[in-house]
Image (cartoon, rainbow, N blue to C red; front, side, top):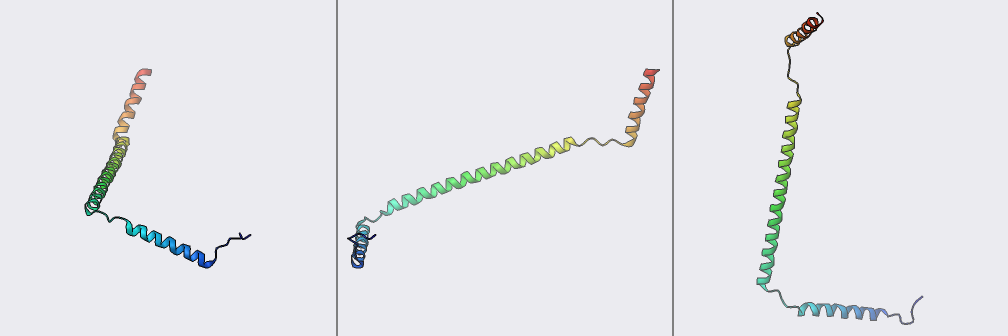
Length: 107
């Protein structure tokens, strides 16, 4: 249901024009930025970016080092897990010694 005070098209365009003019006037009245302030802000931004890049690089290096350490530990564990290779002759000698000891005990 339309209200009894519907603004006409001309009224709406006039309000829009006034709002646009007001915004432009506010922008024009704004003081220009001081070059020293701009330079200071840029220097601060560059310092922040540099610190962030260094922190990121350090974190990445630590992560790579941890990964390398973990891989080295896994390889060392795999090497330790490998049973020493015993030849057939050594196995036969151990078996014969065991049988001889049993035979001696029984007597």
